[in-house]
Length: 247
Image (tube, rainbow, N blue to C red; front, side):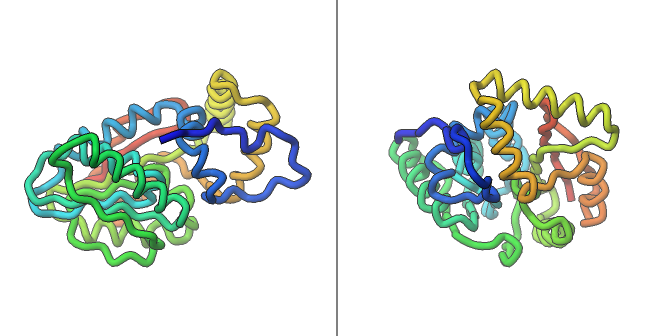
């Protein structure tokens, strides 16, 4: 399927609106995420590998905040356990429609993939079935902070013994100098991927009230408060990280 380059913020905007996952974003999202999130392809592919260690026979696997289904596709490539099913959930109609197209294309390329159901829904209102694996791949940072513990608690209660939550997030840092350094290095990463100073500035303005990152310490404390027994960071590149939380 054709993918457009991300030029959403290339021209000066009289007023930069808050970032939303609409059809304009969907059209350029693969290019946007690759050029904006260091380590993203590695995270996605290895979520599939990690899932293969935790997925249990005849259980549901959840990709919450699935966007275009990159993680769902990785789960289907790597999980080889009898009777599993993936449920991919997103609240953006445009994302859900394109995600379904991508998964249909994957079906045409591979045989014996896990069955998948794509749902348009608010993950905060979702009634989770017993599950052996849940992924939140750069999703929690878009949930209102006051409801993040509630969501994680629901996930923990649905997780079966031996299962796991894989949580990927942009991080902020408690130490001001560390935060400034990693922010500057992230900007350098985006410059190296062809974004102009105008694009970087306007994208920052669009997303700063919508995406609210936590520190690694906050994530760990919240996950433990939700009932998880162990939190293990398995990946970090600049200010982006992924964790495994065990019940």
